[in-house]
Length: 409
Image (cartoon, rainbow, N blue to C red):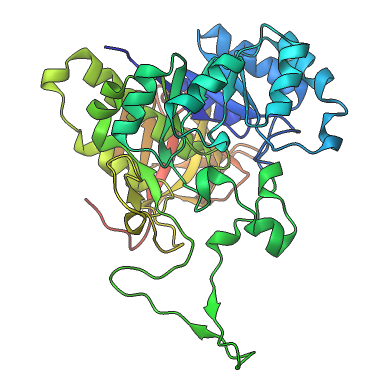
């Protein structure tokens, strides 16, 4: 049995560290240039060097995206950038454009190249083509079914990677012109305005200025919006496809999202590979994926479903708010240090999520503002507070609270 790599996203250094702490085998990031997530925090060259050192220190891998569809002007400094990535010892570069691939092969011949899902690889021959061109791995299109993935993984002669969780684009494997047309922001160069998520009205040709809101029925009506992908219920089928890597979407997502989703796929893969015959889906994994911000979940096209099973409202759902990170322990004062990311209050129970633990319905007994050491009952984003505790809380722990009005399992 081939145990697939778990590949997690990181939009900044904090999320990279949390992805590794919560079980990622590899992390993919974007630099300040050539990446399809221009609005993410992204990494300078010095950041990339540091990120590679952090990943390699714990025996993990770092991949850097250069997955734009480049214009001539993009090539001016590209070779120099590739040399810097090689010097940083990144483990692979993710590309979609043959021209970008050519620059990498010429500039850093030993660099591993992974071909992005943007290349729309939907068949064995295309995967072989990229392998023969120099790719070590291909990221298969999200439109493929389980059967098609099995065939490509078995017959292509190149490593394969599939998405298993996160947002899906309504355009074919992400190649979309709508954002450029409506907002002059080119999705294929990293600046997507997410115009497929906007709310649209219907206007009759002879009645300009009289928009009609389109109502939802039981089948849905939003024109472009896709559900989020989640294959956590199908780990046995995923492993049996023979793919080399399973990928979580989300370089624009929060630290909470990266940690929580990485953790459940880590647990699921490890549990299945340890004893396939005894494997069962843990109900706690299904609860966990509901706690992060998401659209309604779908299995996408993995089970061979049609488009009507993928479309949905643009509405986001979640059962919990991310409220803080455990960032240290003051042994002298007996205080756990918490960096607050959302309102944190003494009168609401919180959950403490750690890489290997989960404490539910914990009431914080007292808080101290660490700037003034005043006792406080409420703290807000950007502040650091101390919580009395005789022992440190788990390293990389995350605090969250139940969203008022959200369902409770």
